[in-house]
Length: 346
Image 1 (cartoon, rainbow, N blue to C red):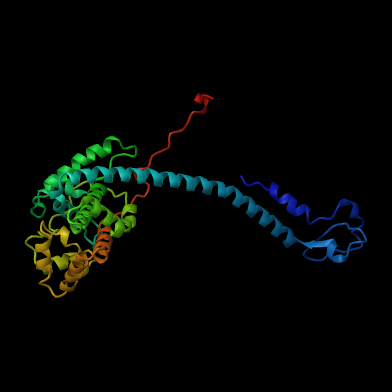
Image 2: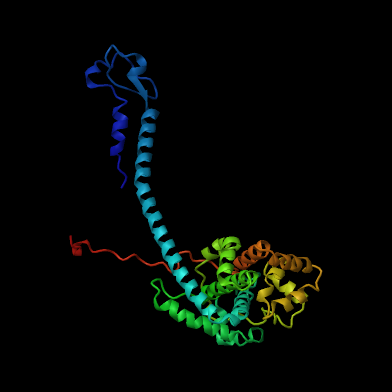
């Protein structure tokens, strides 16, 4: 219900005091004017005011009343949004911690986690907007396909991590789609950190400081916001993902082109294609379109900051990890527990 009480002061201020009202017959009304009885000491302009002035006053007052009332709803909405963001952020931090420990204890499985994430993504079909990073690779009929050979161990590791994640989740179980892509992020970060440690002669403390100072950790912001992917309820169609270790460079280029990417993105994603990044890059370098990008990223990895390589890889992975997905930005949030004030003890 809209209240008009706040219009009264605006209208009253336009009307002279009753003591000054005398005889209005001396001043005949004019079209579009509202006239009252005024004393002789008031001039003609003081005696009348237009209807539109009254309507403007009413409109302004009503508008201010609505704004005042709606602002309270906006404040409530903003507060709810902040609560949801915090809940999702805390849940995501917990997931990353569990995945970090799992990968740290099994460093040899990093290439398989990267390939698992890429193969889940590459079922995306641009024409039909189907497939993509939807967790369909979890189904036995899909993980057992030729292109996914050797990836079952990585999936098993993530399933064990999922049990731990879900056991203490207030916002429901994590989707496989989110789990697999966040695992890829953790695996990438572990390789970045390992590279920094190698540059420091194997000194973990110095390597960690180097990565903190020059690494690209701050570039993950957009990736972190794409949190709320939905799981497929059945395997994606066969024949959409190449068998990377037997594919030609042209076949790889064609597949990346089919999902909207080019030679640059193919080169920067070399660590995701097969278990041996050096071997993959050697193959990619045989193609004149891909060669300049391979060389660019190889040079970048030799620098202290590795900026070009790391930023481009993070950007590409972020875009790939959302193909075909409608992100639910409210996923994993949950109602805040209400406090029964009657049970509070003073």
